[in-house]
Amino acid sequence: MLEKVTNAFSDIVRRVAGKSSITEKNIEDAVEEIKMALLEADVNLRVVRRFVNGTIEEAKGEKVLRAVDPGQQFVKIVHDRMVSLLGDAKTDLHLKGPDALSVILFMGLQGSGKTTSAAKLAARLAKQGRKPMLAACDLVRPAAIEQLSVLGDKIGVPVYKEDIVPGKADALRVAKNALQAAKKGGYDVLIVDTAGRLQVDEAMMDEIVAIRKAMDPVETLLVADSMTGQNAVDIAKSFDEKVGITGVILTKFDSDARGGAALSLKSITGKPILFMGTGEKIEDLEPFYPDRIASRILGMGDIVSLVEKAQETVSAEEAQKLQKKMANESFSLQDMLDQLESVGKMGSLQSMIDMIPGMAGQVSESDLNTSGLKAQKAIIQSMTAKERNNHLIIGPSRRKRIAKGSGTSVSDVNKLLKQFEKTRQTMRKFAKNKGMAAKMMQGMGGMGGFPGM
Image 1: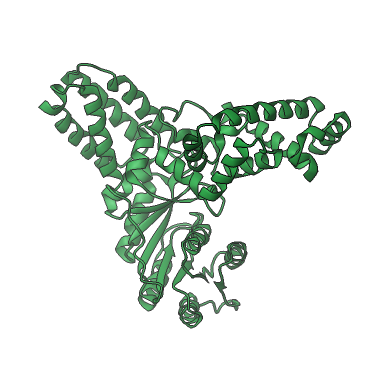
Image 2: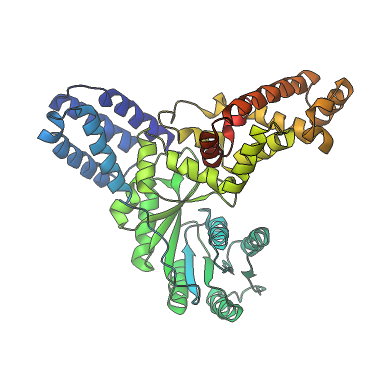
């Protein structure tokens, strides 16, 4: 995520932060590097000038030059400027109470991830106790209705759709009917997926404007592709002028996007980024926290988000059960498999490593041995329930069968069992400190007990 700009800023921060004294020349050199990093990230030129001028003005004052720790003070100024650039504070959806219907209108160009994002948001709201419905009003893109229906079934959220008669497609009528169906069904959120085009055109804008007037949405969200850079800003301006947008969802934030969209949108349009799509899974939609993203860009990590991800995956009750198993040595291969599954739900290893302070950009995807984790899962999944719960019964013949069933070798099975024994020993020692164990297992999803982690 924002790999290039993160690497550039991390290098600058590392060089400046440790300086015990700093001069105006040091500041000018650092700011020049920052300017080049932002331009290479495809950040809007006006935004770059504003950022650079403000940083120089503040950094050259007495606050930095005569500070006890000038390097750290300079980094703080850059961080605060970055937070301001991204939007100051997290912005929430403005939804009505559960007794009223809130309409959220989605818009964007074709290929931006609009339909998938609509389903992701519906799943997120359902998890929060809301009762959402999806409306399939993209009558232009082939299979758009079917895609939304499949996603709706997957997340357990109903989708309002109508059979389309060739030449008589009327998105406004479908939207109005969806609104009535949502009210009649007692739903409290209606998410409307509208048609996109390969580029902004009048027909598309007119259709969305008509739907907006008919539905009076509480939010009109633009779904924009992070990889489009500054073009995302131009697209946002066009939609805002014609339709009016209240916020943005940035998709493909997990890609090697240069960062121009994220770093330019709020400053140029004045509209907040509400969410970011960080993967293809339904749960890969995260709230956009400007301060946390700024910290990630500067290589400072984001431990808060990492812990939140873990807590969403492993409940306090599950963590306590795991702690007891650690203490009484009943931790089994089945428990290990459950923990491996939990880590998989948290996202890619690369994204988790990038959240650790000082690690962003230090470990590449190619450096991570994800195949090892997959092999471990395959080996355990090839065992019987008895074997998973009592690894001591796994003799030579069973090991041979497990290796064959998992597509690995007997030596791989032996290695996993040895690692498992070491893990149990470590856990036994770790569990003696009950307070630390409980906190760690709840906060980090039990990752301390994984072999090789």
